Length: 186
Image 1 (cartoon, one colour):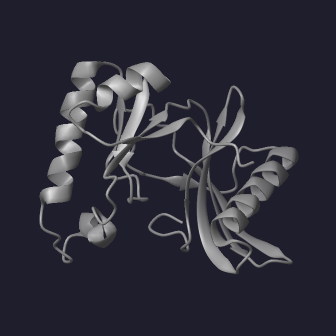
Image 2 (cartoon, rainbow, N blue to C red):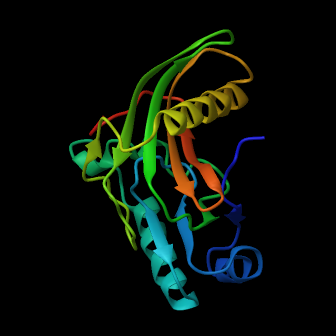
Image 3 (tube, one colour):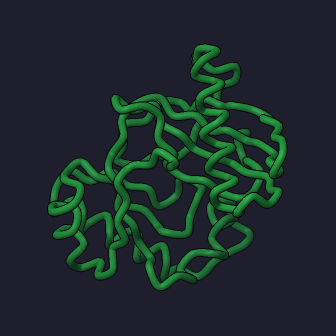
């Protein structure tokens, strides 16, 4: 029941363009399945861009982790899953991050941060803005969607969370949800 973009696993990175062309269409997003820090998120608009993007993502997975590098701070989890790369429908629109604490019976929104606009092909986070440009109704809507996403992921257990949501032409959609506090610019 959580609104999300069409998302598919890329089981064979050399042929994932076929699944994108069949199930999503271009433009599409490709990203590391286990990353949630805007690293390894690439918008592709053709088969050729897909192949170049996948090559870049696979290089990220193969490069040794250097904990002294800022860009490696979240790389410890990369590559543990049998699915290394996923593809998602591209969702243009305003993006916000909702940081919250959620229990079965109540929740606390710690902050809602609007991300600086980015249209790709890469989506490195450069700035978060608070207060946001959202209306009071939109704040209530993304707050509830974030809480619902956390409860779905935790089966009703308590958790801190960082949920990224885009306002699309079809309403808000959860792009990513991590059971961790927000970081870096939040």
